[in-house]
Image (cartoon, rainbow, N blue to C red; front, top):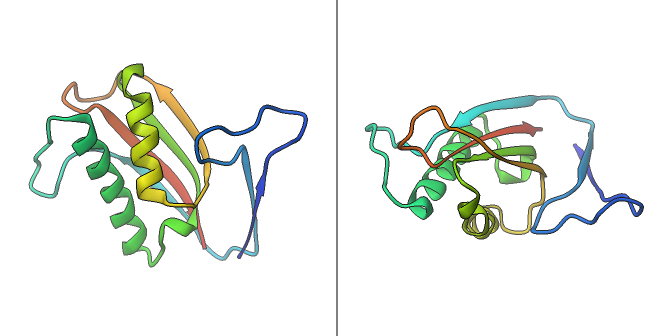
Amino acid sequence: MQRQVINAKDAPAAVGGYAQAVAVSGTTRTLYVSGQIPVDAEGRCPGSFAEQCRLAWRNVLAQLAAADMTVENLAKVTIFLSDRRFAQENRAIRAEMLGSHQPALTVIIAGIFDEAWLLEIEAVAVA
């Protein structure tokens, strides 16, 4: 698989550890990860945003692992936040979970399906 980060010089630069675009070629599989919620396997949802964010990311990583993929396979991530006030904390935890990997990224402020959930994360991965 060949992965090329693209940041057009005549468009705004990506700010915060993501790529404006990612070109992928030579793939044999594409994995579409449904929105991962901040709930553990026993159905528990932590209270704080930081705990929920890390749990939702762990759920994304679990889906990748089940497909024999890693964070490096992520090409596109969409994060739905329940409130704009979580933006900076979300950015910091995303960087913690992804390390130096920079997928294409969209963050949307939206109503979340369950009021207890403060975010949801969906992704596309390629191998």
